[in-house]
Length: 234
Image (cartoon, rainbow, N blue to C red; front, top):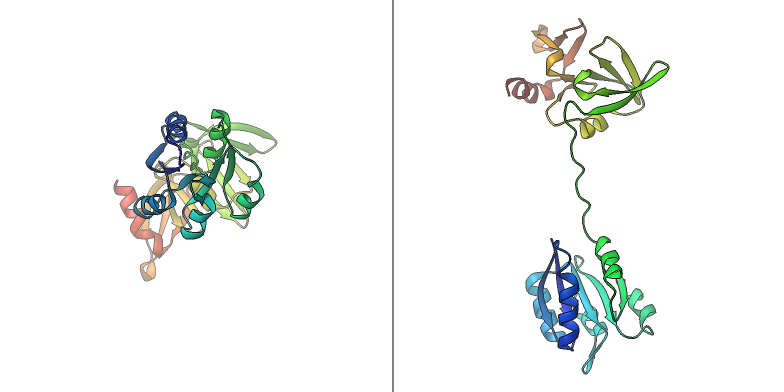
């Protein structure tokens, strides 16, 4: 939610801006002010991300607000019927400079510059991932990846079919991309899927390793053991 403050000495102009903003459900108008003193009080109370600020106010200017309101989280959008102040407006590090009457598409463009991007949806185990295997490229379900093992700047992706693919992608990127809970990090060099674990062996000096269903052995890093146990039991 983007918190906004409207500052304009004309009530019809404030109403028009509020109506324009009402078309954006992710915007919340925290208040309106006709002058600088009231605007500063509202800004201190609500800490808006955006202030839609008229430049020519009765006996004051929008630049007076900028000079007195020092907040790194507040962005200024000047809204005015005159364009001669545009250069000074951008010298104030204003996010934007809108000319009245404000067009809805122009306002939308301004808001898009401050709205946080929607988080990308995580894939499911049956969603495909694109891999180059040998001389062919194809889509493979995430569930068919048994483990991913680091090889320098590359990763070796082992599939349920017995095939493997060498991909230029570090392990941390695989964790960011993969379905939630499908893999767990067993070692700084290896991710493993639960179905690929045949057994966990305890070795000398409290070391442990995973025996996989295809007879590979993956060491378990001590820093990953607690999270791995919890993940296996979940």
